[in-house]
Structure formats: structure tokens, C-alpha cells
Length: 173
Image (tube, rainbow, N blue to C red; front, top):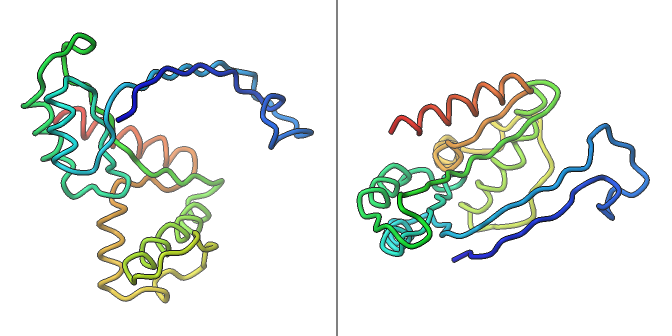
């Protein structure tokens, strides 16, 4: 369970990893208040509901049970002192690049990592490859595609459209 508040100024000059790099971005203060439960199971959804906490579902790698977990959370939600109604958040993978083709190529790193995990050979995320179809079997492709179903991959407009569709699709439910 996560429960803490955090505010921090973010800018290129305050980030030690980016010293000496120029950026068109202006400094921004990012305030995040985290008070809830992140989970990928029905148990997590039920626990957050009974405690009256927000619930974040790890749909970015476990989308299969997402809708049922959200239903369990919302239908079982008990208001708490902090939260009078249920609040949900869904995880989504976003791989963005200058072109859709380059983003799809970058996404092959994630696809390979999931395939390696299913093969029982977890490792660091591998570099992108040009032909993912030559890398995996049809069964491995189906398993990785199911696990990574909540992914948006593409150039700026494609990602924007994909995120908008993702949000609309789950807000209505």
C-alpha cells in the first residue's frame, strides 16, 4: 500500500543526469499525492474497496482481469474518511517515437522481454529488433500480445489518439 505526499521541482538543471543539456522545457513543480493501492488481482481490488482507498490496476502488464477487478472494486467500495467515492487508475504502456514505424521497432524490446519471461529466462530489456515475427512463435506472440494489450505505440498523433480511445473506452464502463 502506498500512502504519502510528495512535491518536487523538476527541471533540466535540477536533474543531475541531465547536467549540461539544453531543454526547451520550463521548470515545473510536480505534486503527487499517493494514497491508495496498486494491484493486478481481485484481492487488491477488494482490499482497496473495503478500506475505502483509491485503486490503481496494473493493466499495463495484466489486462486480462482488469474489468472484473474494477467491477469488484467499485461495487464493494466502502466510503472512508478520505474518500467518499471510488477512484480508479489504469496502467498503460506508452512507446512514442518520431514515426509509428520507429515506435513499433522500439516496442519490440518490451515484446522480447515478455517473451523471455514466459520462456523462463528473465533478463534485462533487450535492444529493439527489426523483425519481431522472426523472434517468437505464434503461441509466444499470442501470450505477449495479451499481456501487452494495454499499450499505445506510435508517433505523437497516434499516441494521442490511442490514449484518448483508451480513456474513453474505460471511462464509459
